[in-house]
Length: 357
Image (cartoon, rainbow, N blue to C red):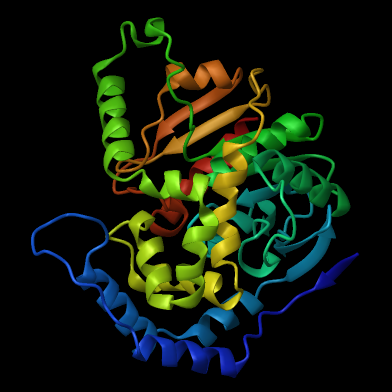
């Protein structure tokens, strides 16, 4: 069964949040030391969340779009379902990641719905899908749920696209449902060196620079991945109880140049739905997922941006046998959330990719 859904956060929850924000006890820090998200940024976000951020406007924006909930494999799945004015449009399922939410794609709904019937689900354990209820919700199980969702909606031929975790889940949708998925479009290809020295032979200067950035990222900013892969429950107590703690933790992976209201919209969705803890579990689950050695075969397209994860084609071709498009979005597209910051560039590339197929 598929049921209509509306976002209706009780006023008591908004009042409770405001009270907690007023009582925030900010951390100290050593001036000039780069040891994580700065107090100044957290203070600014908390002040905006308390005094200027309009959650009811976010609610109204979400409720202006058709939303539904259905149960798949024992888990509630919330999703936007926006049909194109073109009845023959290709269905497209869009998948967000952590620390994001469906809010990643709100700016992209209008331009994409000119060409696609859109399905935008909240990941299990994220946002309006509610907390996960049992173990096992890794990328592959989510991909199988997405295939079931599209079948339940009557779509027998569709595309998949994603960002962040969605860039890992979307290729898995193609793997589990290749007879129905016509292509997969992602903003990152998370393929890493296998350890074979031959993989590093004759790498271009550009790819060597990309490896250097990757090495820096894991050494300087990879702590979130380690902690969430090993002990998400230990962190869960802080991000569930403290909105300042939540926004401070999430902000490490929200680019500094993102507008505060985008950051707060995503943080508020985690907060009000009580999914700040369960969202962390995806890393734990994926760390224990059995690896697949066979490459994907559904056509794959990449549209990465400067300032984001640097995908390296040599490694990608080991994991994906049918790469048909490999692009860097044109400037000024930049960073990790191009559906929000470079909407036209990204949506044009998605449209062109599927038209070419």
